[in-house]
Image (cartoon, rainbow, N blue to C red; front, side):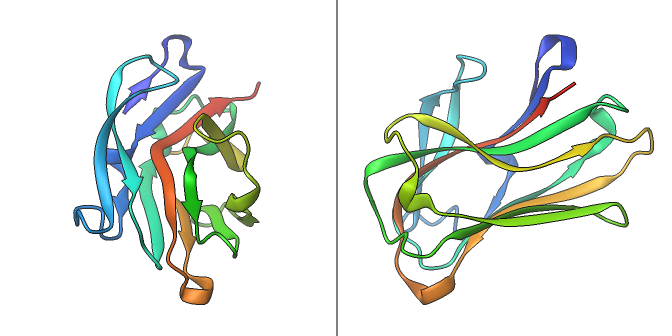
Length: 160
């Protein structure tokens, strides 16, 4: 996890996420990439092929600045060889008893390719009460084999 000076953003890296079959080299490969938010070399998860996509984490919101509005986004790169994205994926988050958001994202329409993109999941205002939130990216509709994205992590960017 990285935290920017001035607390303008907090980043969870791909290694902080639970990725279904993430340690199986038939489906995912862990590669070193230059992180766009810190310019440091970090591990990212490159999708080789899956038909059931699921990447998620439980995040303790107590490290966020109370009263600050944050936008939560997945940081991914769509590669030129991407295929199997005929059905949208679901992006969402839930803070128990507070808020739940979910929407569809059409990966096939993401541009540009071979560049890091922040795909918004949703926004929320951090509370002074510590809590946990679940954040996820999932897609299994159609059971079509998907490939060609690199998952860098999740970023919480202050909006105030």
